[in-house]
Length: 364
Image (cartoon, rainbow, N blue to C red):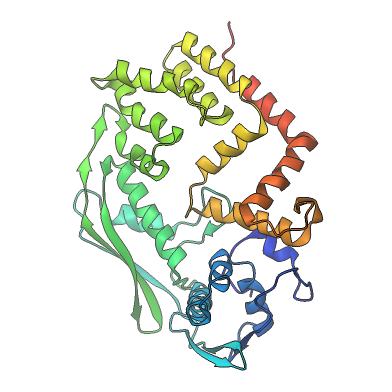
């Protein structure tokens, strides 16, 4: 069974024998691990973004605490809810002493505090396996008898699924939390609803689904999403149309954003505006605008941004093509940009342009 600290697909391509140009993890020692090999744990830490940031910290003690928490969280993802990691320092090396504890299984799903949404709806969302939106992980479902993944990523995924069910029922702004509760030899998933929020429907359209636009700040996805309620039937339809139209004048909006805006206009029956934004998308179908759109769609702190930075780090550590001519060490984002530029020139750019062109409104 693989140690599950990170889920970057790139980690599988690295072997413990490979020497990275800069490897601050060489002096990390893991003791007490039984289920997972100590070498495997260290190798996985080397591909974890949080661990990398910690190792670049000027404080060894602070870095050690972060590494211990990452190892602890990895064990909990593997079902070792009681796993603990102690820290020691020997001859300038960080020593992580692991106490694994038993591997526990999933119990039941409990829901409290719910009123407008039946508990069975929430339970169904959590017991059914489903692929995640970014494709990088799979929600295995909290199925009785299965391995109880008690890590923070599972907790966050579970809560997102709860909120999604509330939004599907037309209720937005739901607040609460998910906890792991030991019950004999199993672990129950406890969903505590603190505030269900408000019902926010206009006709058959659930407006709560657009609340996640807050993740994008003032970027173009938020503009599009916030305009949708008014476009559906609000009192400020013309103002919303104006906000969308101004996206074409914002240089921060690239071909992806403009194409999506064109599709929205087309669905609304405004062929003139749709065609205008499609032309603007083609005019900005270059690498710089497309790369900016990609980062906009993967805000900091999201699984998608973590995966992209992992890709850049992998290219930097294993590919000379992304290194500057002066031999300096690029950061993950700079390496990602250089690597994607190579892929863009190799054919991705033509593919993106074809995709934007195919999305243009056609006259019957």
